[in-house]
Every structure is written in C-alpha cells, then in structure tokens.
Length: 104
Image (cartoon, rainbow, N blue to C red):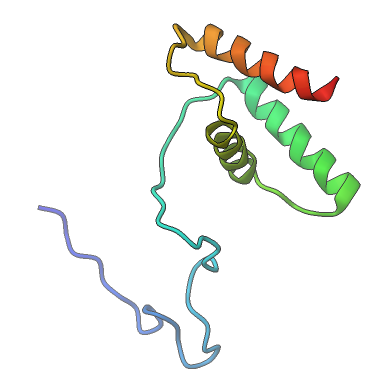
C-alpha cells in the first residue's frame, strides 16, 4: 500500500507570506486531461523551431502544447470530414491538401 503524502506547513491553496496559490497559474477555462503522446524527434524539433520563430517574430511565447492544441482545434473546426481516413499517411495527405489550398 502506498504511503500517504505528508503535507508541509506551506502546502495547500497558498500560504500567508505570498497569498498566492502554489503551482502554475490556471490558464484553462475548460476541463482538461493530461495525456502522453509519442512524437518523433523531428516533430519535436519542428515544434521547437516553430515556437522559437513565433517568439522571435511576435514576442509571444507559445508552448509546444499550445501549438498542438491549436492544431487539433483547427482540424476539428475545419469542417473537413476525416472519418474515412485509412491510415496516418492518408490523414496527413488530406490535411496537407486542405492546408495548402488556403496558402496558395
């Protein structure tokens, strides 16, 4: 049986010295779940390059997670029917076709 965690005197929703809650500030306005996904090293490098380029051009610091969430939301809101995709490669082809249609 796992041992229960002990709470320090400062643990909890904040402590008297700062009046602030512990941990990262809440930035989500909706329910969320932490998940683990496997990406290829080249995909991580591409995400890192993109976030660095965004920071360099706009000064805004987006995280990998924010980029991935934006891509998922854009895909689902695009109206593109992806339910007949046969494979990851087929899905990728359909998305590239849709994205390049708008960039021309």
